[in-house]
Image (cartoon, rainbow, N blue to C red; front, side, top):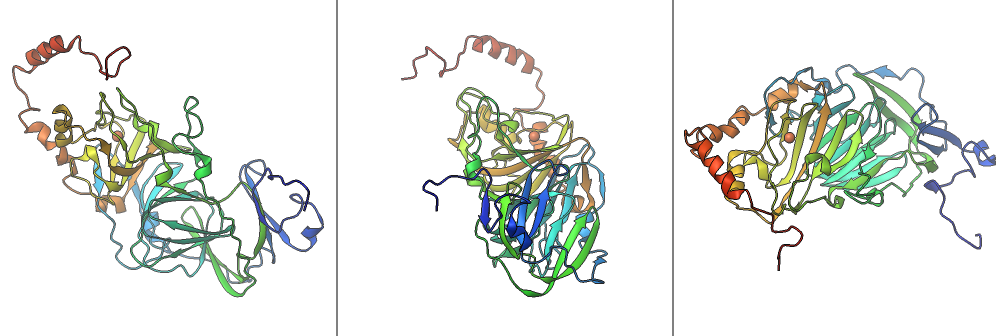
Length: 429
Ligand SMILES: [Fe+2]
């Protein structure tokens, strides 16, 4: 060992040559490059016992109807809000054969899967990087770069092309799955709040336990390119990797490591909770956090004119939904149609019944125009969701009254000089 130790500029595990494409070790192991940007972007190299394209001749074939709900037909979302019930698969299927598409635009799709059968094959997505959110369940994600344990509340990022396999633990499993067709998720950070809000790169967990498999047999790999699923068979285990180096890697990110931005005397907009940006989509986490003081602690009424909003409800009270939403459901709020707090939540705000905490976790993915909804999602849509704001037309405090305008004018007059307590110079002792 050298007298001094150093960090390498690139992560590496196991047996690797001195540099990519260089050194005598390359005459004894087989280098494979995994990269984006046409050899000019992010790259990793894996070093294999056997050539990676040693598939058995004559065994490759297209699999028709392999994951039918993943290709559920899409149609315009239209002008109606949707609340999707929890998906109940008609039969026990594995992570990918049971994948069901909910919503998509040109560059990103949202899917759901509730795997209840083992994967007896390896999978490669050749069209998208996958971002999983584990709403329920856990297990081990085995990848070419090594295994990763995962559980409830974890994001798993599986870059485009990386061979992998889910080994699910016993018990119910339920994942939301985002496909990014045009790029990998980028960590979101604002120039003025720096690299540690709302999370740090140090929260990403990359595999580093390499267990090279020197095994012979029949190993099936299924790839997906658009709607085409193709199976090939290799005579050696695909995880015959003795070492790797690079920064194009799968990783895990726990939702509990999101440290939310909060505000006194105002309200952090949904985009302030962004964790990842993807081409055509941003992904946010609303997590357990303090309720804003002296501000609008409910979501304001809004219409998001360039994005169709989805929220997967993972845990908690879902303060703005007034009890309509249960864990595991997904809402879809189309472009242009206003939404905001349910009447009971707004009433609590107006009555100054302010809780101390937002005790919730929701995963929001907003899809740039135009987004489309699938037939599968429409089949889960709850008929009464649009009625959940119905009290705005029946509750006496919200319905038309002739004296309303005069009342508001009088109140505005009375409150004209009102100031925040938390302002500079006020006595908050
Ligand atoms: Fe919204």
